[in-house]
Image 1 (cartoon, rainbow, N blue to C red):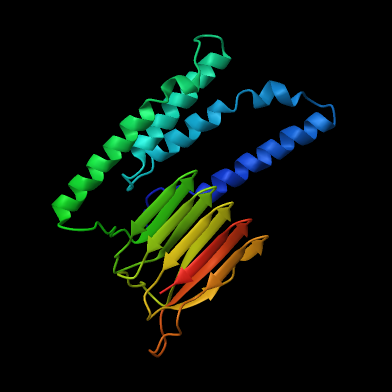
Image 2: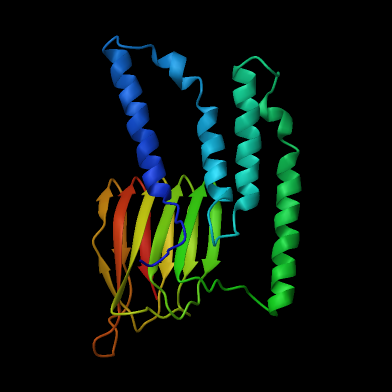
Length: 230
């Protein structure tokens, strides 16, 4: 059996959280339990998310964010247990630290590569929450990926990539957010997503080559949108 690295699915994680939240609220309405007794422990979700980012094998991007979520979620959990007195707004100066560190890191990466940095992984997985992401992927064996934007936006450039095999699948989820996906002119795009008070538009040109590789874009856009362009 082929050994595949662990691949975290943000959409599965978000779905499980929504299911759990709905179940707790339903049981509260049925007077089976008091929702406040359980919802007060929401910081544990921050810890779980941070740990999942840190343990994601084969992906280095975002581990610093993972440690940040673990720290904040752990401190808030200890505050709920009355072990420490912690207010997340006390950490607002850390915003400057992370912004500065991100600028330095990107500058060093550009200097090492002599220009813009393009990811060479066979999949593209990105998660934007109250933030923006710009990423390039130049894999010559592109197999698809997963893009999630919640009250944020992202621009993914695949124009330097090549699909491994006849097709690749990209799953998208946009909630009050936007996703822009740029693909080569030699790819044929097939959109099978479901928009709910949102839109998923294919603005690519029809490829001039015979039997072009297909990029299948599927997923959901809720009060948000996704655009596929050349």
